[in-house]
Length: 320
Ligand code: UDP
Ligand code: MG
Image (tube, rainbow, N blue to C red):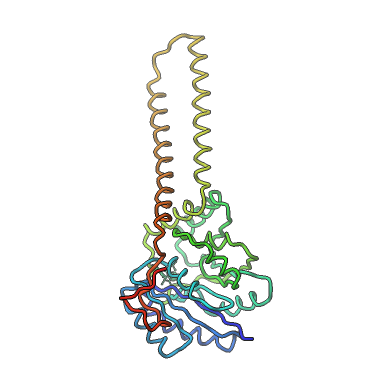
């Protein structure tokens, strides 16, 4: 029985990279004892990513192209690709060749060797700006204290999953998808392979600073409610300190009588507590916003074109 390896490639503005990616993937042919299926998900790119992909698909029957009606983000594109993948093993990789196709051979060997459910490629941070490395480290340390699965620095979305792991992942239907957390949540034995960081082949990273911050926030908040627990802890602490201080004031009053000054204390207490309350309210608001998104239960994305379906077109989007 031949095994099929599905390669899922989320693409946003990757017209200049697809040909090279295809070339490098095709070069692997003899080295993997698997049939390849390449699923290119065009995440509503404004450039001609879709035309390039479609043209490639017309020449190579192993390629399937899905195209979104607009940009829905990488998480949605990955989800669409994972849902479309039919392989016994599925790998998700970036289109910009920052995830070296070479590595698939090693990953494939590991996952074929037996009980491994996920093989993760971990990049070293060579060549990253020092500031970014610093903030990433800090971020992972903070996040890990706030969520109940362990995230590792440098581990991204470049991973190969066994069919059971893919099916498990597809059971998680949440709209706020923080896939680093989801991958960790599903479990299965994980193996890690290190690789050297490489720069993008062409184009630039489509992440803006604001998106990174949002993504970071999502990581902490959308994953579980542990931050709310921490907030409860903070509330208990503030109350306890307040009560102790009150006891002290009463004692002071009983011994020395009324002592009028205390302006600074009053202002300090009002502002600090006010700050904590606003923060708490904002955090609760963040959760409500996410509940709102989940309750509306909109599809994660809209597929406008699917090369495997003749009838798909802008008039008949597939909503999922
Ligand atoms: N990507 C996507 N949708 C988006 C943004 C990015 O599908 O809205 C894809 C992009 O085409 C690439 C991968 O996600 O294949 C990683 O994006 P990028 O290289 O911009 O991020 P970085 O490597 O800087 O993390
Ligand atoms: Mg990249």
